[in-house]
Length: 246
Image (cartoon, rainbow, N blue to C red):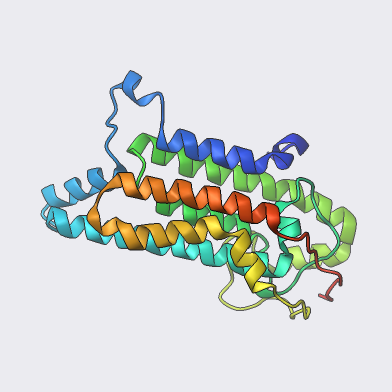
């Protein structure tokens, strides 16, 4: 079930591939499935059911998309601020520190959880078949990546990691911190620049979604991706230096 070393190394490209297939699922015409967005399909279904008017339903669903995208961006920025952009972007697993600060006191994998929340938000712009595929594929990939990291960290930190693993949930965050803070200082600006794609998506949805036109939304998402690639390439490779006690 765990990801292979090759999958882990190219995890960023795998995420991009999943999103591309989600937005442009080539199998839809072959199966006679609708190519209209999940946003429009759900809005129409809510209107037919008499729950809301079509216009009101589109607004409600847009708010839902913005909320999920914002939660995903917030979770990833929070996690990246503590773990460091160098670790986030590294093609290999990193074991310099057993982190127990920020969101890592509540969830062992806040970055992967943030990615899943982001996917749910942007999936409303995909056709239903693409949305289901993207959410399922991203979830499976996050689980595989997390399961690959766990034995690696256990081999590095032994009982300290086992104690951390037993107290902190794998994905869904605990309402309260489960371990003492280790004193790691966050790097907020660096994290925001490293996660600029997700922030850009939130801005795009909130700024341009109210016209209910998919074209500027798609352009905004692509621009956000391009800007993030440039910014990530410019960021210094910073990793935490101390192992906090658990």
